Length: 324
Image (cartoon, rainbow, N blue to C red; front, side, top):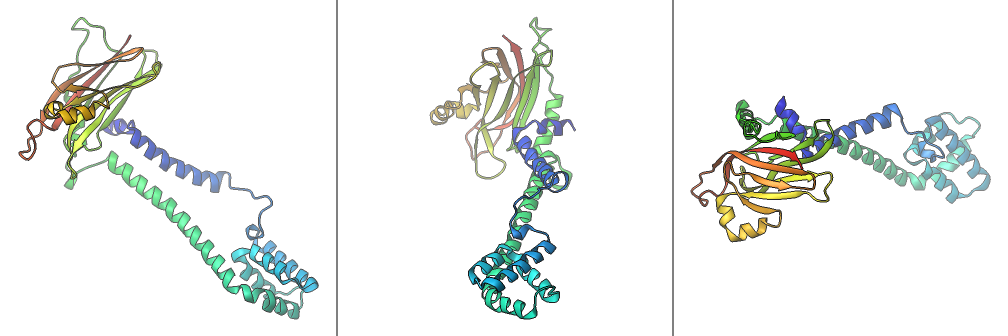
């Protein structure tokens, strides 16, 4: 459950969950709580009995004026409801004579039969596609969210993300008070495990009184390989201060990536490059906050096809924040 709560803090999950809930709430609001009320609606939006009355008036007007174009325009305004309204009038002529109805059909309706059928088919197809898209968005979104929150390998095997969570829980936080230092206002632990290609942890920084001060986090900055799992060679450690104008970022790189001039220069555009070393604090400072990112545990992957110490197998990192 704690793992699920932490994943819900991920911006990607928040956006996905917002889309799903927004879709459900929108459908509930639009069709149940406050359905749309039409004013000055087109004839095609009228009730069936009113559409029939509209068709009767159209026939009566045509009988008096003989204006075929106006009559056809009015029929088309009924859209796919026109054939049904016409059939209802033929079944129950009312104050119209059979001669008037037949003359109207042959002069006005007959040339429009194909057009009306096309309108009906198009409207039906459009409605089907709208509902199909709504259902598709919901199913895909719910599936992706469930897959992200409850990812498991074959036969219930724990995934990399779940193993990372277990490693985080086992890691011991630094006792700064015992070291003679001031206790941080926020202290977080996070773990990356090879195979967790969506690794991206973020945390809210709050004062003792509960005031929001900013955010910090760790995410993948660089990975190699087109197949899964990807080989992560660098992480972004970032700090956001609500009182500052920009987010401070440093890039923690593997030994191979750090010493590769091309990779080093490319990643320096994302933030100051730092060599990943256990127990070596990476300091980030903003106008009002100071963050110390310390690698508690780290192992490299062992792939003979790649340079030595080029990608991470596991990294457990502690983020501690103090006010300035």
